[in-house]
Image (cartoon, rainbow, N blue to C red; front, side):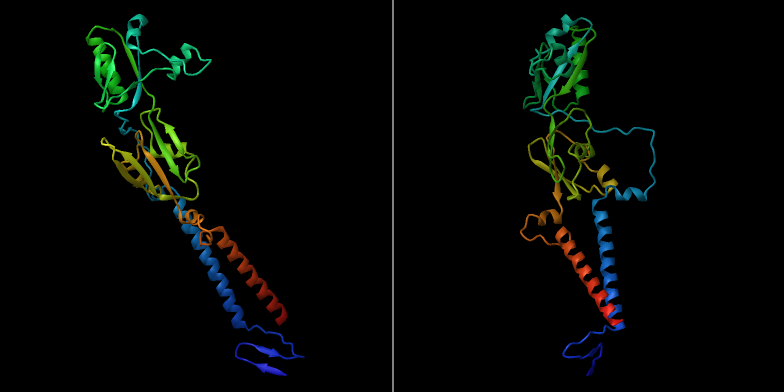
Length: 302
């Protein structure tokens, strides 16, 4: 017995039939697979745009400048702790201006502590911005850079004929910043030099993970009154990074890398979204099943 329909022909034999796929059905199925593959390709391109740094730098001419641009230095604030060491050709003269060293690490000699400043007692800047320096009395420290404070103390020692050839070294003791969120090594990091950039900070934290949002890195910065100022930085844009007020890190900054949608959805029970691994495994399984079905149908049609 022979039955004809619009799209297929079924030949009945003892209650069993064989489906004959038409050329039109095969073409439609092939087109569907092509569209799905194209969507996967477009999706992968979008993912690349979400995670690549400095995308706009490829559209500009990179000029290697010979002049160094001035960079903002870290200025001291109340509650910052610093060490100040005065040296000269006559150590007996400078001993009066140096605080005693405290051996904080067992096994280290006095010379090792002096060289590393790890055993140096420090000055904590008062709320009015001053420190009580030996002989000189109250010295304004807040608002100054390390070099400015060093130069001021050196001039005072020289002008008062206390030390003829002083060498004054100012070091940071407790200055730090914190990195949180989607980075490989979140934590608190010490500031050991005058210029630390946002790129340095993220590198010290092991860089952002693949699940971190590059377009919305948040920097929280306490102002002089203790209130937090918020800055957002798009790490995908060269211009946005270098022109941001948060490009140079200050003491007590908090850097937060927000998780992307995939990472956020992993906290749910059924995180089966377009960006989840389980979703793409399901898509691949579906495509494999469709391909197998088409292969079987085409084999039977021969």
